Image 1 (spheres, helix red, strand yellow):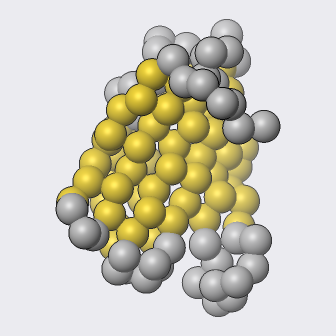
Image 2 (cartoon, rainbow, N blue to C red; image 1 turned 180 degrees about the vertical axis):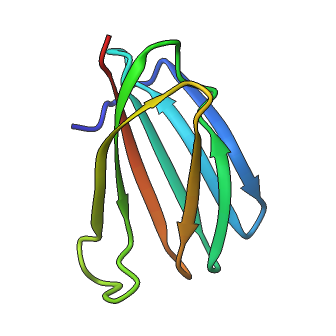
Length: 103
């Protein structure tokens, strides 16, 4: 469930009129990452916003074969602070990720 209030918000990468990636932290320590783009784009973001814990990450990406599907789930996989995440989005696409603290 998406929280109604946030403890922390960080813009990780953006280019006006092109793309944006934002991370938001819920009160329970869980992080949500959202990316959106106008054009096909690919870039890396570092997960420096995470605390020094282990996290389980799940990513939902657009399906390039079927733009109108629910998308594809990638994960879960373990990540830690400082890891790098490749963001790859189709035209007018996006992706979201959740980070559940495991410690």
